[in-house]
Length: 205
Image (tube, rainbow, N blue to C red; front, side):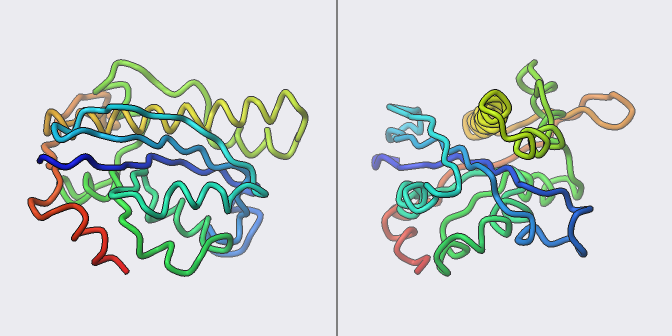
């Protein structure tokens, strides 16, 4: 690939638990924060430059400007959770953008879900140092200290997602740990289509 590409890796945290609302509908939970890593990749798909930013609800319009022109918008379980959760806040064409869900690709490959933490531990030798339940509690506490912990947690998830994605993009494989603590590999192809990237992007609207 000779053309550079613009990618966005993102993660959202919500204000409520599913138990607080009837039905399994992420759009009813409210979004507290979105962390976004924007970056430019060269023709070899290696990162040239990148920047991490986090946005509270009042800043979502500014956040969306960073996202809508991306060649690929990368998340983990983003089509099942993050995109629906954000849908009340964002333009109608949001769901038609170039979303790339790592978990969806894994489910296609092996027919089941695996956790981000499992992938991080097996593939990267690292792990999450907090969890989504605490993220909601940080929002509800709403102190300066708790909101900083929420921001740090969301950005950590984006960093792990980015590193997982990059590993699959350049190595074609991820590892995960199953329920019995056994490590497995899953082969994945995260390469871009051979067509010109700009043509792919324009076809989404």
